[in-house]
Length: 310
Image 1 (tube, rainbow, N blue to C red):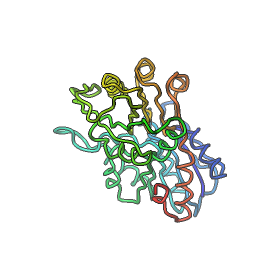
Image 2: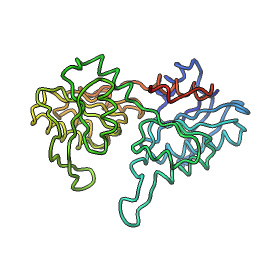
Image 3: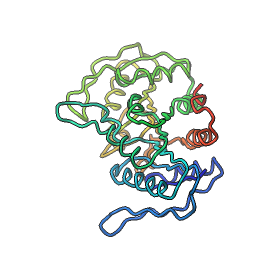
């Protein structure tokens, strides 16, 4: 087995390597003067089981091209099997036609990854589970819920905790967490007036006197989460925390979270945290290296990956 990494999240890749007791593969990923990407694999990979660890986070297009070119280089170097490990799968929010004459970009990206030489894909908390069907190769969608549940149990008394889904679409994810920590479930009913903005309409469930935990897969601008937190506090919640798998946190999201009524935002390192995130007073990052490392180990030894979540 060999691990290779692009420039999107080397810190996470190194942590995975430490868990597996494997050094990262020798590869050069650099740019020409015009920003054209060049990759050189600097060790023999013939007949090897290769894993390319690369989140397609900001800048999404650059990191996606790095992934595609690394896989092409490995394929042409006669790697036995190539697994694209995407802790964060960019373009996942474009999983359907949202209107007339619009693309399904998640399917396009799936086609690109397959054509570039991937034999298998491993990702985590896809925005929509059906994206697995966009790939014509085996695809493992790992779940961060066990990590989040463990962290909640370590930091909170769960007898007064209530899990809250920030929208109707996230109820399945919220229910899975609520079941693991044996907590009740509430839902925020919101109406989105235009992209990037949301208006909270109602809270479904009694949150009065509860420590509320908002859970979602992606936080981008942070507007939805902050509005939901305000609505929960207005409904009598004792406090609000948020557990989100992918901390995109673009634009002024970090300052928005810092000024909000959210006591603490917990995100994973599926996207490498920026300096602003690391220095934020109420944002904490937990590692996914153990989860991803164990899934990689089980893949290469042909063991069950789904049993990780039993």
